[in-house]
Length: 205
Ligand SMILES: [Cu+2]
Image (cartoon, rainbow, N blue to C red; front, side, top):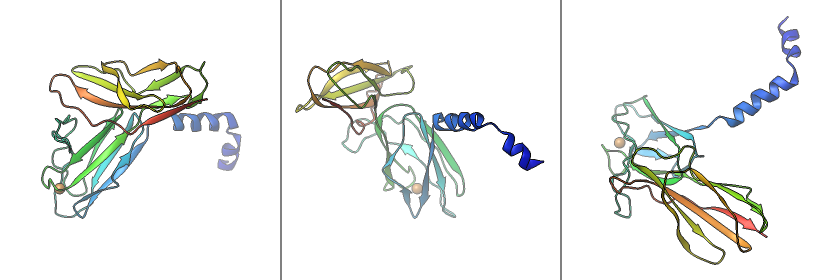
């Protein structure tokens, strides 16, 4: 009976389930052990989550986004797990591109980072191509804004969209070559920001 039922599932339904699975945001694991966060750095897609697990016995830890960035600029303090006791977990979802450095509040020497890249679609095209550049899964709300920088072919990174709440835009290139984009999440009230994300590049031929 079971075998028959399994065989009776149409291929289309299996495909649908696979497609839904692919569309779901992923969760990546970070293990806290030996006074380290592992892995680090950890690349997460926009909308992806990180699940921290304290795999030690007898030592509490936290996962706390820096309030002072490694370069001494004001950090976001976007998340703070509070105490993660042994065998406990904490989860946080990253909606915006950025480079998020964090530490353990109990053991400040424990440092690590999560990185989230912008997306570009398509990734290659010609002068007539409209590229969709996306730096977040949601429009920014409250005091949050996005800063997006662009590097033209043979150029350097310059402010492109500063303090915007929109999560994406269309981009029409005016020259051939490689364009790169990077973004960060900022709190316009505190002035704190993540560091700029790793770059996403598009090729215009
Ligand atoms: Cu710790």
